[in-house]
Image (cartoon, rainbow, N blue to C red):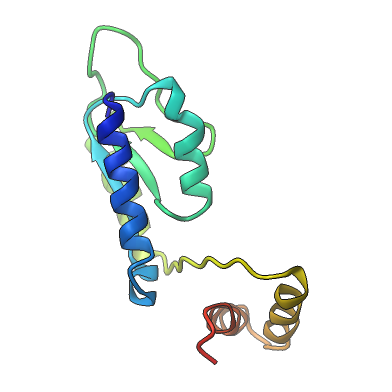
Length: 139
């Protein structure tokens, strides 16, 4: 992942999967590699993780070179695993959590209405389901 074209290709593929359809909103996306990311991508990968486009750039090589490399970015957009157990635990957690990607560009007024309607539900799960169905325009 030290090559810029590899990073851009991984980001592009992730976005393509993410926006392909509503069905892809449940798919966790991890980019697996064996090298650290460059300094110029640290903020980008954290932003992509926070935006929900990806769930992380993960490096499976604890010692890719003789130099010291970062273990993780601040928001964990990039993470280097130092043991197989650490990788297995994070991977298992990722697959067992129910997650949903959502994205929209709507006015604050429309967003407020959606939140107000969703908030009328009694249970957190139902609030989330109502919010997601409204934000995606499926109601």
